[in-house]
Image 1 (cartoon, each protein chain N blue to C red):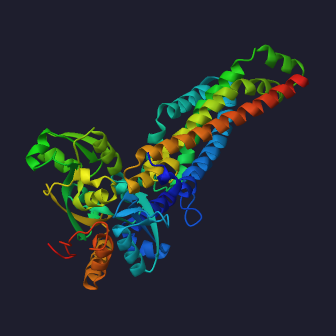
Image 2: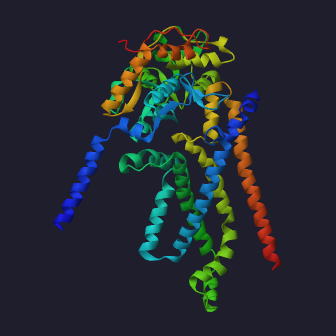
Length: 230
Length: 268
């Protein structure tokens, strides 16, 4: 094993061609992950609340739409958005945008069901008690239901976001220069160090994912203890 | 109501006419940018330079010359073999300069320029395992997905077991690990590969090839004017000696991959 190939190309792994070219490598993986985590979180929250508060055809329609995005592989969605939209609709989406949209839509669909399950896990008495206090449904949701349901959902969000960080590597299929893509470029030039290079890439993904886990754990502990004090 | 409908029909017609008249050459000049699909993982045709971190290579040099002749900026879009036609069809690039072998099948979907490079399909194997083409039918052979190498091998040697890899380093790693007994690619590319291998004395490229491939630029289907422009550009490059200079920069005697130039632009 010869890890000098890592040291020689370290800045390319971490930043891509930046500052003399577009941002790439681990930094782009972070950018892709953070923007799709935020978008999928917001999407999941809104759609999950919609699932919990709608009935009849609107609810069925929503379940169907979410089912569609949960059923197609991320890779397919990225590929079709990038290559098929311009051919069929003459509508051009840049590569980075394609990846963020695909990850957000699919992550959001998964999270919507987690949010729905979190809200449904509360006893119906909570809604009734809020109504008895004279709160409208929106206020009941904001002040009574979500503060109790969100901590229950945290593990699901964390799971989904970690899956999303790893799925960002699928951007390679349309040539977006995130971590695994630039690693492949270096591997293809150096030819004989794939073991060293991809061990290092695995380590970077491990660091990114575990920092998210540790960060979320710290926030949850602080949030939890603050709640106990009141 | 009828007038409104007629107006809409007229609008639709003019939109259609606009599509039919659209000329890529004008579009490129208007945009001021030439978008070129080039390999980013395929030395010496297109790969990321360790110092500049930019994509460089033989195909990139052609792209640079074309952009400067057009008087526009060059934008390189990295591609793998399988994405070359989709990138053209989806209008993500204007031209593919990525060691693109001219075939009838591909010509149904894209236009090709006249060839600017030629190579033959060859093999790399551990020393002593592969002596002649007759053995191919009984071997496990690694190929790159979406290349003509895969198709040619399937047609000519149906007995061979083919294992398709995303790119050449994966195929070569499979060869090193013994998952396959040989891998196949265009000769010049294999020579480039072998030049980078630290234990190159253990491998060889047997001196036979199973096809003659002509490499051309891939252009959008039915863009005749743009195709003719590129053809004229290539002939000019040969006449001015620049094509030879580009070749020598990557395959000349002082490079890691010295290879005699057997094909000149305009040869049949």
